[in-house]
Length: 592
Picture (spheres, helix red, strand yellow):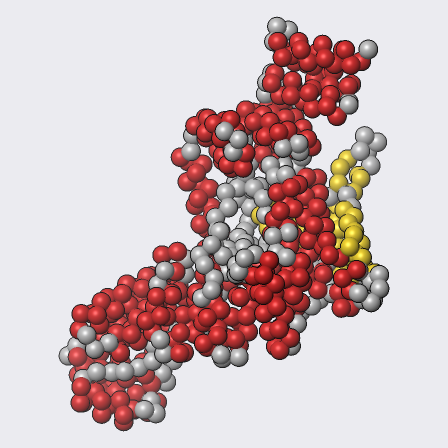
């Protein structure tokens, strides 16, 4: 009995998601999170295998991985994002185009620290020369990674019955198929699923089919010309169907294409299209800032990256914000503005150095900022490990020599200057400038690559902090009162959100599951209602309202034997309860 209750606890507790600014999902320092308290499973979806000879439909397999990674993201379940999946492939040395065996797929899942693995196959049968009339059919299965076996249930005769999820239909309805598949997987895992089929389908079909197809084909091809055409078409089709709205994922991928082509102007334009609510906003802003630097627009680069320093505190972001601030200060003629920029630079680079004390790029930039404000002692201290790592770093040696000189360490300064003379090709030019103006102009070092692994790890840490804070401070009863008020007002979606918070704080709150059941009954999602009400009774067997409501639902379904069972159990709890009496009579009358 104790083990059964623990199982219900694992199913009951919910997880508060952060990040409307990201579809990139959770990770630790190695990328994917170990489930923390309140999270039941971590699921990874691999691209489905095309078992037909219609190779032009290979994009469909990738679309399943892309869509299901989004649709399976519900409270109580963490989904390994497609970026994390790619990182797992890279760490195992597998090409992204690999169609792995079951054993390799499990190895990928373990590398991503997933507990559930979704695999699938499909075949496409074109009905005619018109590809839009093609038919699709296939099946999916879910593997418990740690056990290495398919999910299922133990039958009364002791057999293990595995689950297989079949799907099929016209290719034009692909997204609806994916939505139904996602719901089946979620419902099979948790009968008290707090998300309805309609909600999943709405999420699945939010991108127009033509736009979705073009996007998936675009990200799959290595041909840059085709990629550009597909992604631009995806943006056009999306905009046409959504009153001019932006398809952020397509804009993001186009930004990367232009970045690769060193088309800084168009890269900056497309990355800047993404808003804070979009999944890849942080990465897009990071690369937009780099693109503006390449264009020489330091002000726009700073305006783009500075907001990230408070929203996503990563070393690379602090470093680049500081490095760009130093460049802007060097180019600024107004004394007050130059001073402000240097102050900002010191703040950003100081935080970067604190978060990554062994990062020599950060140390060099921080030393230069300290030098520019006249803090020569600390500048020299920051440069020592840089020079110890690379004794031939001419710019670091030159800056070190001038820092020592200004700090009165003449002999040490001369020795460093002699080394700088040996290894710095531009020594003569820089020395002439030093003698003329007592200034040093060196390159600040920008981080060129956005680390998705670091970003995902930070998101996970933030998610956990939110969960911990909510768990520590929230009052389940207050949340339940709020949920009841929202339910009475007809605001079901908001009520469900509050109920998820209730069971996160208090997983065994039967009243929360009762209200969850009422909401799903009102939405005519009877399977979800039944699951929630049974969970309510599990935690509180004397919760008469749950017995009565289950009796009514089964009566509505025409299952009079189950309706009578719950009517009798309600009468046993309280024989004088008028609703229980009415239900019992109604079932009896129907049986005659």
